Each structure stands twice: as structure tokens, then as C-alpha cells.
Amino acid sequence: MQDRFQLATLGAGCFWCVEAVFQQLKGVGSVVSGYMGGKSKDPTYREVCSGLTGHAEVAQIHFNPDVISYADLLKVFWSTHDPTTLNQQGHDRGTQYRSVIFYHGEEQKMIAERSKSDVATQVWIDPIVTEIKPATQFYPAENYHQNYYEENPNQGYCRTVITPKMAKFRKQFVEQLKSDKTNA
Image (tube, rainbow, N blue to C red; front, side):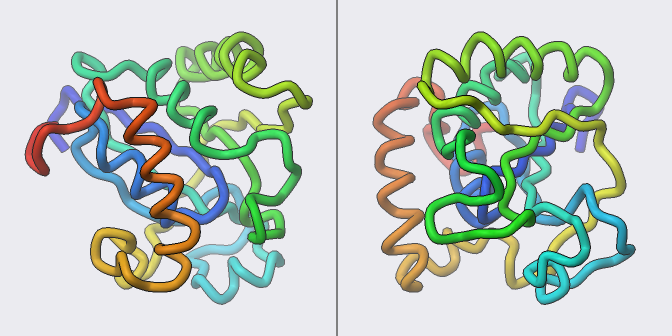
């Protein structure tokens, strides 16, 4: 990515959902599904799904802060998943589906902590269980997980879980949506 781009790494349940949402935002250059926060090196999807690696499914977002701020990315994050359920999003259960913000630097840490206490509590009534941790080694997921929703919109999980989430997201964040696929 070009120098003006920064990284945000977010876990909010299944990475297919997170990737699909953030790919649509103006200022986002790319989104890569992967794993972070665990103890094993080069984990596979099967290993992460076992819950034994300690990794979370995450999306690593390359964004242009001149177009969309880190704080605005976090507003989308809080609004597009349930940060009040520990190690669970819908029917997806396990530590790999935890709500987590992996920050890249002290500025992101401060913004994330402020956003958790100010923004998230305006969206959610129940206590927020989202972890805020320093970014560790990122492991991209297998190729078939990348761009999953766009390439598999008729798959059962996509139709029943991601499509309704995307409709709600697009309605709520209409002003922040890309007008076409190349508008980063």
C-alpha cells in the first residue's frame, strides 16, 4: 500500500462479515482476512476454528486517514457487530470470534479506548467486552477466505447472515460508501 495508508486490525466475529463491511467504505484501499492474537505460527483455518490457537479471526484494513479516520472506522466497527457478547457473534461461538481491536501504535490505542468508552456505550446498553490489545503477528487467511462475500453471495451463510448485515450497514453509513470499487 502507498505510504499514506495506515493499518487497522479488527476482530468482530466471522472475518467474512468484517471484510465485507469495510471493503465498502471510502478511504479503504484493501481488506485482508486473517488471524491475530494467538500463540501458534502460520495457523490454518481449521486450527483457529478449534479454539486452541488463541487467534481471533480478524480483518486487516488498509485505510487512508485523509479520507476516513481511525475513529470513523471504529464507529462502523461498533455498529456492525455485538461487542457485548463474550467470544460470540450470533451462532459463531469461541474465542476465535471475540470482539477485539488490535492497535498499531499508541495513538490508535488512545483512540480505541476513547471510542470504547464514548461511542460504543452510545450504541449498546450492555457492558462492552471488546478487548483492546497491541497488534501482534498477522497471518493472512487462506486464499479462499479472501473477498469471500463478494465471490460467494449465494452461499448459505452469506445469504442468511452477511446480506442482512450489509443492508443495515449500507443504510446506516450511506454517506461513507464507495461510489464504485476503485474509490479508495
